[in-house]
Image 1 (tube, rainbow, N blue to C red):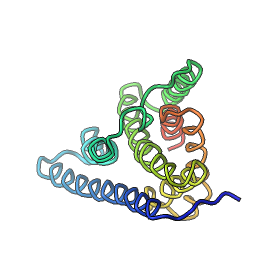
Image 2: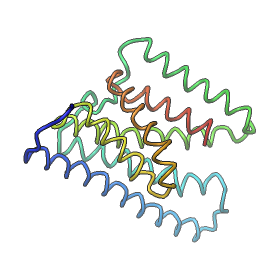
Image 3: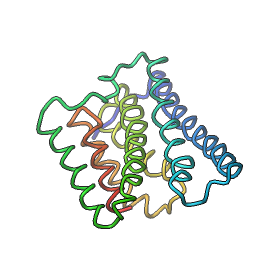
Image 4: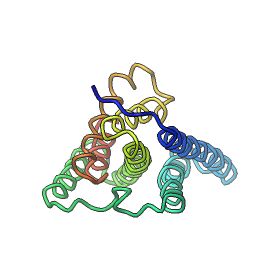
Length: 209
């Protein structure tokens, strides 16, 4: 049985980690509302490329990537290696990441007009990068310090499935996103980098979503 002692440090780390997630999601909400106001004021057509970028892509990049990145570096003094955003050292991992992205792009080209392929690529890459950074670089790495890799992967997957995707159906999150979250967590554990997980997440979003 995998267990860990509940200490003050463990509790504080958990509270700290959940707080970052909560603040990031609250910031995402505020930025989305602000973007909605701006797009309505300047009369940007709903469903347009600019509307998608303003309403979803930029708010997610700022709230789920840049904010926790700056916070972790300022508070925890974390570097790129601690946050697992260095590129994989082993060539096979890098090639696997690039091949996954390339495969997703080629597959998506069959479903999207060439004129519109760049927009979903950018959008879904930002989603993958932002969610993987917040969940795997911040949540999983912080929980790992006090609970070990097993519980870090489980907790990160639970937050990924049921908090990040709170607006989705509970059953979908349970049978789909929770296993995906565990798989991505294991990938990050073995790769010691979030980039292979970002590539897989990006490919899934682009092909399936």
